[in-house]
Length: 133
Image (cartoon, rainbow, N blue to C red; front, top):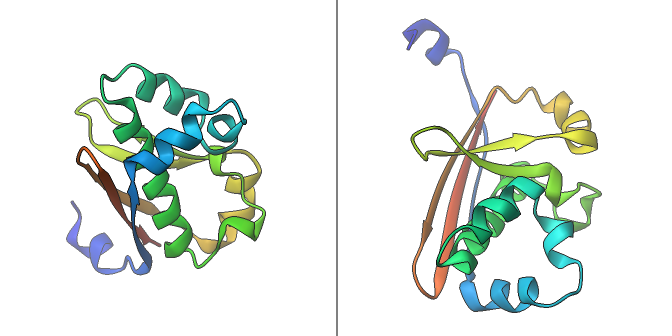
């Protein structure tokens, strides 16, 4: 890492969220369109491939909530949650990728880096998001 570059980055937001896995399991399990509204096709594919899929859905949901907190916006802000996507690198490390209208709308924030940490247990999932410019 270039120390000079790192010294000039600035944290522009942090967010944390936790959710009961059962709440997400109930919402995802229904045929209400909730899953498609909140999660990208890649996220659904990833979570559905896991033995404990609702824990993974819940952690991703918590990360989306944490991201909204970090940018100071809420569910009713007009952003599409399925365009706020939790991705994993080759080593399994989570990240966050914006796309579509959501990416365009947030471009003025000058986001350079988004750090994500996820954790889940049988009954609870949590996430923290740190945004740098």
